[in-house]
Amino acid sequence: MSRIPYGVSSFSRLQKDNYIYIDKTKHIETLESYGEPYIFFLRPRRFGKTLFLSTLEHYYDIQEKENFAELFGDLYIGQNKTELANNYYILKFDFSGVETSEPEKIYDNFNHLILEAISTFINKYQIEVEYREAPGSAIATLSSFLEAVQYEIDNKIYLLIDEYDHFANEILSFTSIDRFEDTVSKQGFLRKFFEVIKKKTGSIIDRLFVTGVSPITLDSMTSGFNIAKNKTMDSNLNTMMGFTEKEARCLIKQTLPDYDLDSMLEKLKEYYDGYLFTPRASERVFNTDMLLYYVSEYLIDNTEPSDLIDSNISSDYSKLQNLFSLKDKKQNYEILEDILAGNDQRGKVTVEFNLQRRFTKKDFLSLLFYLGFLTIDREEDGFIYFRVPNYAVKEIYFDYFNSIISEETSFDSLEIEASVVEILKNGEINPFIEKVEATLAALSNRDYIKFDEKYIKVLIFSYLNLTQLSIVKSEYEVAEGYLDLALLRRNKEKGNYDALIELKYIKAADYKEKGEALVEQKLKEASAQLERYGRAAEFKNRKDLKKWALVFAGTDAAAVEEIK
Image (cartoon, rainbow, N blue to C red; front, side):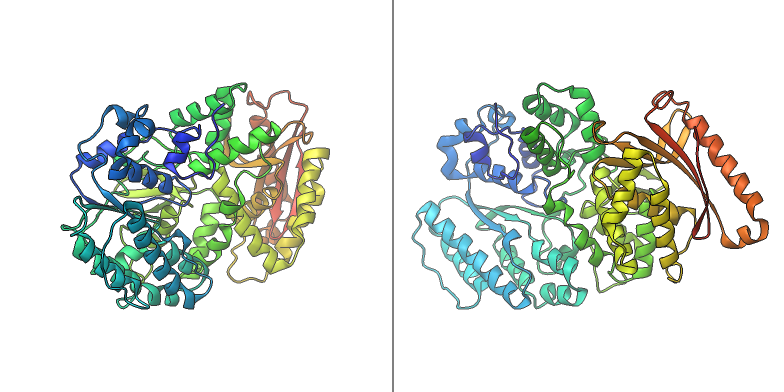
C-alpha cells in the first residue's frame, strides 16, 4: 500500500518513495499561462505550501531535466509539459526556520538562512563565482552574489521564497505590534531584502513565487517591493492547495479501502473541510495537514484519533490570545463571543494591512481569515460573510475561550470535563449544571461580560467541548427546526447517551418581577421544541437519547427538566 505523506513536503521524496501524491500540477500550467512572472500566494499554515513550492522547484530546475519522466511522467503536467520546464536555476529561501523567541537573534537567523541558501545554490550547480561577503550583512552579500552570478550561468534564476512572513507573524502572534513594526519598518532587514530582489528582477531573476500566510508584511514593505502579483484570491487557484472532496475521496479510497467511503467522507467534511478563499469559487477544500493526520492516526489503532488535530495546530489557540489582544481588545472580544455563538461575520477582505492606521473590525476579521480561523461563507450585497470553516477549528476557539474562563475563575477543567462525561455515560446533567452555575456566579462581576442567552449558550457549548468523547453542535439543523445544542458521541462504544439541550434565558430583573410564572412559560416553550425535535427521523424512538430543557434566570438555573 502507498505511504501516507503526513509531514512530508519534499516532492521528489513523495514520488520516489511510494507516497500518495494528490496531483496538483495542472496549476503549474495555469500559473505559467498567466504570463505574470512574479507572484505572491497566501494560505493558512499547514496547507501544502511547502510541498507545492517543492513541486515548482523540481519542475523548473535545469538540473532535474533527466529526472523529468520519473518525477512527472504520470502526472498532468508530465503529459502537458510547458515550454519553461527545466529551464531555470533555482534559488530558494525558506524562512519558516527563523527563530523568533529571542529578538536579538532574529536578524542573525535571517542572515544565516540567506547565506545558507547562497551556499546551497553554489554547491548544487558547482559554480565558481567571486562575490563580496559583507560581514554581518547577508543582504549585502546576496546583492553582490546576484550581481556576480549572472555572468557565470547561462540561464536565469527562478526564485522561490517559502513562508516569507513566518517570523513576522510569529512576532505579531506572540509579542507586540511595536516589536513587529520594528522588525518590518522602513529600516527593517525584510524591506532591504526585498529591495535587493526587486533590483534583480528583469535581469538575473526571471520568475518569482512567494508563499506566506498573511499580507501584513506585504503592506509594511510596499515601497521596498511592489511588483509581485497577489494571486491569493484568484478563483482559478482556489484549489491549488488543500484537498477537494474528490481528492479527499481518492485519498481515503487508497488508505482506508475497507471502510464505508461515503460515511467516512461525511464525517471528515464536518471535521476538516469548508475552506473557501474567494467568493468567486464554489469548491471548498480540506486542510491537507488535518486530513493526512487523521488518516495516518486512524491506521495505527483502526479507530479515529482522540485529538481531531495534531499538537502543532491545536497549540495555535495560544496565538489567538495575542491576536484577540490586537488594538481594540473590547471589540475583538465581542467578535470572539459572536463567533462562538455560531454567527456569520460580515466584513470585507483587507488585501493589505497597515498597522500604523486604525486596525478596524474589517482588518481583524480579515486577519482571522488569512490565518485559517475563519473562511468565506458567501458574498452578499457587496459584503463578505465569514464563518468558522469546520469543527476542528471551532475546537481551537473553544479551547481558547475555556482558557480565558479558567484564568478568570481558577476552576479545574478536569472536573468540568468529568461532569460532561457523566452526561454521556450515565445520562445525568445536574453535576454539569452546577459547574455552569458556579462559573456564572464567579464571572458575574466582570464588566466586559454581557449575560444573555447567547453568552450562557457559548459557555455551555465550550464546556461540553472539553471532552474528546463527543462532538457538540450548536443550532443543529433537523427536519423539525434548529436545536440549541446537541451532544453526540464520536464513538457509540464510548458512552451510553447522546443529548439534546434547549436553552431559555430570563433577565434577572424580569425574573424578579414575574418570578416562577415566567420560568414555567419559558420551560413550556423549550419542552415543546424538544418534543418536536425528538420526532425527527434521526432521534425518533431512541432509547440512548436524553433531552433537557434548561431555563436560566440571571446566573442561576431556574429550571432543569428532562423531557421523556
